Length: 383
Ligand code: UD1
Ligand code: UDP
Image (cartoon, rainbow, N blue to C red; front, side, top):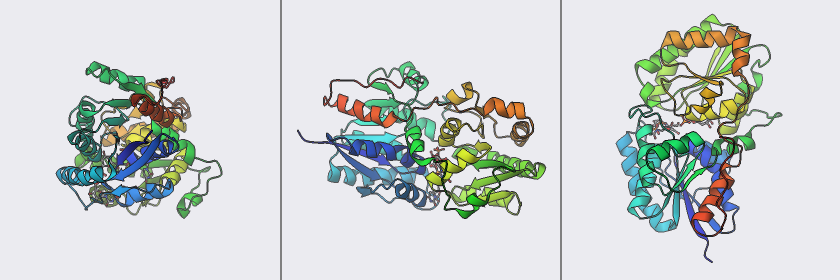
């Protein structure tokens, strides 16, 4: 029997980190030809992930230009995907999450009448403009997809409520699969400053921030809050790998340059980031991926957003929504930096997002869909 040609499409850093273990799992299956098409919506940040996970794309659309608009990304992806599909002739296309690459990848698959598997399906805030444009991207992909790989039961329930009731699988999040391959106790950083941080003497706060809906005043507030935290807590060191978006670079450097206990550094390779997270005291972030990784590593998270589509760790008590007002962020950080009981209450490892076997379940579900195995995979039991 011919091998199934399963093409994973991704373009940004988080999609790559979360799809890398799946591309590998699919490669390990004798029934599958695992193909990888990158849009390179991100260039440097994507290439770094490809290097860490030793992935070589079969097709590279190479679409990134500085300060690209949503329309440019989407239209370039659509045009480029035509060629990739004609050349690689996939039987199924897998997209991940909610980026412009995700939406364009799914839409392109639809135009070519190729079935779509949506990895990380069913996340919702029910606010059209927050996160922007991700909430709409993932809703549109739900309408196109044929197979839905939901990280948690909550994600599955969101889809059921919207009337999607066929081929929903609860798999856990593939980010936990990735994390299991990168975090090591004896890890030695190649970014020298990370080896030199006083992990035992000071409270290392890991910071990231990049969301489009935070551009402008919210991001200004966040940066001012970070400055205040650094100035008021001499026993902290803030480590902030700054996203390459020029908007974020300007906001971060404009407010935080010159503070002795704030380290603005280049984006970190995924393995460095995961091991830094495993050693830090606290995470302040508006990232989606960090909200999933940090709880698994037992690190409290303050989310620099007004809402989250990841309520599971909030319910488990390890993540709190801090919002985007300076005073709120500072007061919630103060609590965690000065009250050991409040810190202890949040600093316990929880794994609502997976057990590290999401990719195995997704590969099994794909084989089941094509009738190559009789057994439908069991749902992830922990969610
Ligand atoms: C994108 C996704 C967002 C995801 C984020 C992860 C969309 C609309 N947004 O947002 O959902 O959370 O990625 O990081 O899909 N840049 C570089 N080099 C890089 C990457 C980015 O220079 O390797 C700069 C470019 O100037 C680019 C800008 O960053 O124009 C913004 O990148 P873009 O992909 O448009 O949006 P993100 O904010 O990264
Ligand atoms: N990450 C990384 N280096 C960094 C910052 C983040 O490897 O300097 C990883 C992080 O551990 C997570 C993913 O990138 O796996 C999250 O990406 P990002 O925050 O850019 O996007 P989001 O998850 O919000 O879509």
